[in-house]
Image 1 (tube, rainbow, N blue to C red):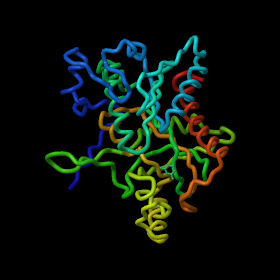
Image 2 (image 1 turned 120 degrees about the horizontal axis):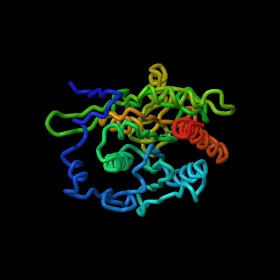
Image 3 (image 1 turned 135 degrees about the vertical axis):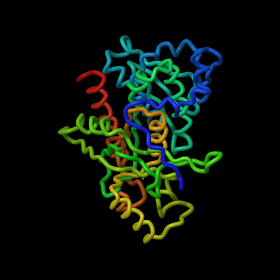
Length: 314
Ligand code: URA
């Protein structure tokens, strides 16, 4: 029987943090090199980030740069809140301003897991391993998705993210086979994001379960890939099964992100994704560039409504 480790929602679980490696970084025995973002624990640039209150993840660097500029503007502009860029950008784009670290994660769980692991190590170092301080940090992925029974342009705040078989994210490990991760998002944070977006004109925000496919085509049961393993019947049976099980959208990172953050017991994290299409009606993304821009802006708006409420009290 595979094991599901359910972590609590209130406290960082010290036993799940990789102390064997990370404690030596804190006591100066060795440096930690955050290779994919081009900084190391001894870099003076990190002193500017000690006050980090939130880590925002998005697929593309372009989005990260826009988010950081906007957050800087909301915090007095570049004179008051300068935007700090990490030096290496060939894999991920990272910006810090006014207490928020923004980082791109690329596409899919393989890519996003690299960004997330380095950012978790980085935040552990920034907070000097202090569990209470780590608990205060808010983590959020803001992305795009395919809707299940929802039209393009709906913003989904995930309650849980699972794999295409509606089981948790899991990986092979030595000894006792697969390790299963907990894909639930903390209810308090999820509810606070919904509340921060209530009654806003022209913004539809709903709650739902999310499926994270390992692939855009095959593990999302599309019929329009170069390689196709489904028929119209098997595709629709899968989508209806998701719909019946409360799944509202499909993307490619959330089950891993929730799993790793739950593994450390972080209590404040979320995923906010806009839908680009209703998968019950088709596979191809045919929205116009204007529609896609609006969809993307809407998930950003939902995030910023929460950040303003939670970090600026506005
Ligand atoms: N992202 C996905 O992973 N799937 C979609 O259908 C749209 C965006």
